[in-house]
Image (cartoon, rainbow, N blue to C red; front, top):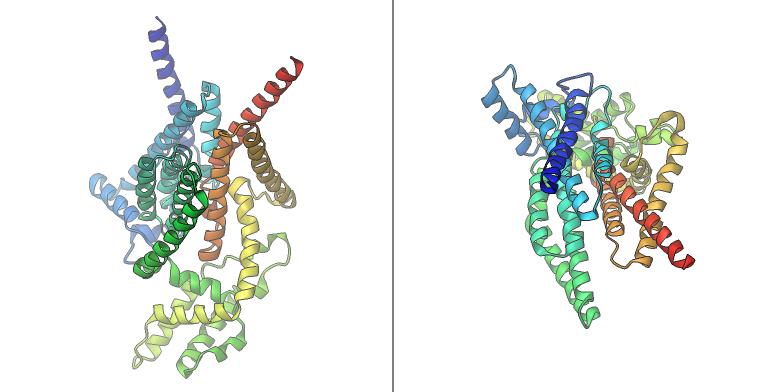
Length: 448
């Protein structure tokens, strides 16, 4: 009888999660298929910089299977089903790991929906023809492997983590940052293993030296390739020419480069894409992301090339030269603006940037991070092997790597930084639960 009840209880549990997932991922949003500005890069890739192979291959495969007229409907359905399955697997693993009840599992399941909601009510992420329609879902599996590897310190989870990071990198170029979080996880695990043995200081010194050598070798062998598959040229131009002044024309030696500089500068200035046009208030970050600068530059270089057919012009190399020289000249200003972007990035990673209360959003985000850190330390002081604290610190560590890397190497758009938002609230609940249990346990022992 008990087995029969447990079996039907499990079926009802999965059915409830599945129904909730269908309501959110499939039915919410005004648009069924949402074609965004960047969607054409994946629908018609044509060797564009930064477009990784797996998502265009997925779109082509759906087109072959379902045909021209209905394949985008199929893409939306597949992306929605993938989101349902990945988030269900994630919360079910948390339920088993932390001994949660059904209502707690449902609560965490709702939290996992948060990153997919940032463009609602217009459209859910799974309805957009964008790489995020898949990467947000797969990220939950990546993070599951990340936590299991750090917590259990078994290298089988490390292998799974590397495989998942490579898959995600082959879908979206910005997720090259997963190399850093995966590397940090291996460092954390190895150091913890070494500390558990004798003579830890010498072992750690040897390990750190080996990491430096391995990292240098990796950069020499694969650094150029990583730059090619990333959006290096576009980002260099965008971040560099945002800081440009007219006097920077003198940075270039040849009359041709000076003329190209002047054309690009004039076009960028007319579009008001330079730093001098940014507002000087809390909303400055909204004017620090002018991602159309690269398109303007390519347009002007193309027109110059047509007018001067006798010249052998490589638009990519010219973009790199324009962006790099200006960026180096104004590196201090670039760092300042990057820090300003990071402020909004740390808010967007855990909370919403609500315009009427945006000043208050800074304090809400600060409170959330303080709660995460202070709560984790409190749990670890009371219970050395606190899984909730480990889980939260893993989330916060990943968010730190995400925000710093995205804003230094790419452009801190909102959709780039919300990967761990839902997981953060899952961790916040698990931490809260452990803090409350510790509090009552302490009071009970005091009464005795």
